[in-house]
Length: 306
DNA sequence: AAACCATGCAACCGCCGTATT
DNA sequence: GAATACGGCGGTTGCATGGTT
Image 1 (tube, rainbow, N blue to C red):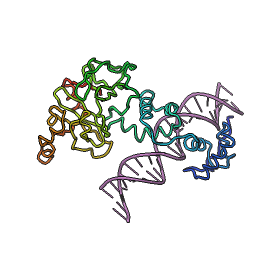
Image 2 (image 1 turned 90 degrees about the vertical axis):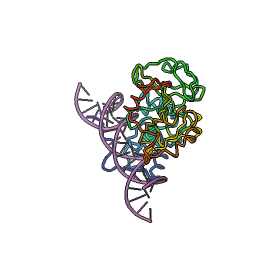
Image 3 (image 1 turned 135 degrees about the vertical axis):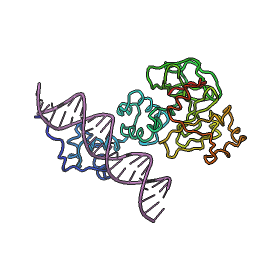
Image 4 (image 1 turned 30 degrees about the horizontal axis):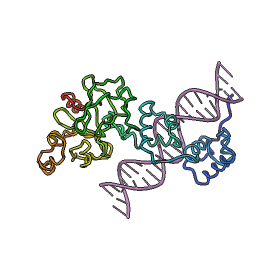
């Protein structure tokens, strides 16, 4: 025979913990510790709870050194890095973040970070994983050199990857445009996405050789003038209908000829003339296959990987 | 003001490897 | 060695809250 059952399942309380229960559990553990036996603990502590429930409550909430909420950018970076490396092994990830619980990290990932990293089309898009330093010499997957090409970097040397998702953690060019994730479409279709620095709405740009600028991603699809300084130059007027659930691909070629000054847009009366009623809009939504075709049919001066 | 919807998060469920009988 | 509980973990659920229509 094996062990005796841990508790009477029919007579244990479930649901949210009351302040009184919290106090009982905390007082008991403060005085006696867990004793390495969660099963017998609730009875000793005067709680009508399953040992598992007590353990969970203590580890995820009552433990004195726990920090809740307010994840820092550094913590975001660590979580994203580890997730792309080892997947949803929350206990391992939590071990790298002092005072954080696996449950908190898991919730944070599911409610915040995951939305940043995935699109409804099922492809991964670059994210705000800022390098802790600008030293790029340590990563073999980092492009080895870049030219200064307007607000974007241009990859000078071709790169190839064995994985379809790699993190390029530490590349910042002179324009402070940070280059992030890489996906590979094929040998001759290497692209590098460049996020707009200064924008907080998850937009990304791809500059094509014919000066067209593809803008996609984003909760709201807006670029302020400060974004222009960092690689923008357009404002997407067609905003997503619901936050974080849509992904727009926008061909701005008709308005961004030269794409270096949003004043052009005003001078050309683009904003005023742009509406769906007169059947003219410089903003066109593209599907994933269309965008791939657009990119593959052009020689990109910006190297982008999906 | 009410109904509806989206979000955040605490807690539970079930699985798996290990320990115990 | 078999049977069963324990401890730990990740996935999922359900409730509370806040925002929007």
